Length: 525
Length: 82
Image (cartoon, rainbow over all chains, first blue to last red; front, side, top):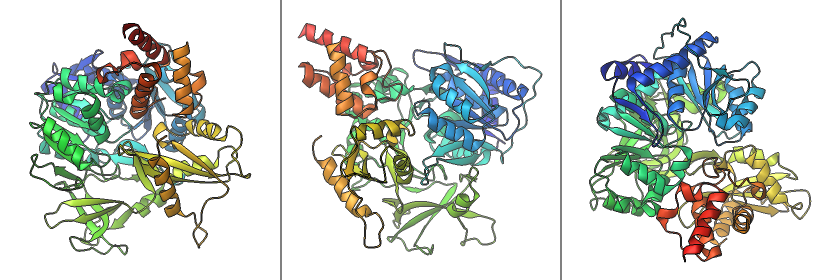
């Protein structure tokens, strides 16, 4: 077993230096020798600037060849990379950089505003410009620092920290070691048979854990990675063009992207003979729509993958041939071979097959914990009561499932206030905390609602001092939120109330808000 | 300008995009995350209805819908040919 993700790149660069490693349609391309060379320059520049093993290095670059190169550069410097959403507000980027104590930032002049916000939040931050046509004020250039020596990186070191929505209002950083990432990547490359002949899509943004399959499975196999930028992924027609023209053989995205491409990307009229495997994860694929996709992609093996960022992918469901399955909801499948699930009741006692309970997960892919938050880390895990002789633990997924006798899990929802919007995790508490800081807001709550097209949206219920919203209140609130939260976390509907409904115990009546949200989104806008 | 103003109004009033009235005509709206893929389809449906044109799915591509100014040029082109 290799000692780190870095070893995967080294091996592919040695075994097939001239094979294509990463490319952006219509843009740059690097072969494996080139990817090793350019990421090495970044690594040595970081080291020469004082970055050392165990440091955190941020990536704030639009999706593309440079962003992927920067990921490798940061890891080769011995650092954990911390990808930041380049479309999110600067305020959120600054919170993440401050939270993880970022030592250096690999940046693009295309997002100069967010870079400035990060720099303000972290005094002494070393900023390197690795992308962008304009000069980035105050940034250093990547230089040949040949004297710098790359540190060894081993399995226990952190590979990356991915920030997800946090219920208390602050995003939480999921720490993933090289060992955990390798466990997942080796499983995935073996299970899906990724080889040097494959062309792997990079559809998900780098701060979303789906991207780790794309980057690292491709590098391990010596396959070609095709990077779709932020604009391309939002245009179904453009994304489908890439799938066809780049002859993608292994595609991985959220279901929403595939559904969009089926509806608006003319998948049925394309030459997709190169495509052999389609993976999707992040949210439920509506079963009837998955059957439609299957009838268009009859020659393709489809897999539903499941797993919170904290466990990485831990279950998978190979979609049976079209016409041979009748589930009304797409199952999340069976345990990955390197993980083990356990369904328990509220007292953490195992429940029999067929009984709903919370899914616990143990195995090689689990996170180390949340950055700088030992309490939350402790609360996220439970000791392994099945094998008390092991220093081992289960992660509490918070997801409610039922295990069938054949080992397949059916997914039922959450046991807390987390929802998925466009495949992204959203803690309602984080949105509510941001709302509370808004102009004129005294009380605030957020409820999810499902639109007719099956998309989840957020509805905000706000109470202020007066009976009526302040003039221009909703617009002001929306502007306030847009400055703090990524777009998918900003509610699409706002309801101004005198006060929020409460239950007999004085708590916010979430059931009442849920049904109000449902009524609201049922009406035409 | 009239097309851009109408789209700005739609973004502001219907999609409730913050500060939609002051969006620069050349700002890449989708790339910068100002509108997402679902809102993009809503914008396409809006220009169809508002300007009496038909927008084929193959026309909802970055070159036509990247920014307010490309959208306006697209609408003008469609109006001239129908």
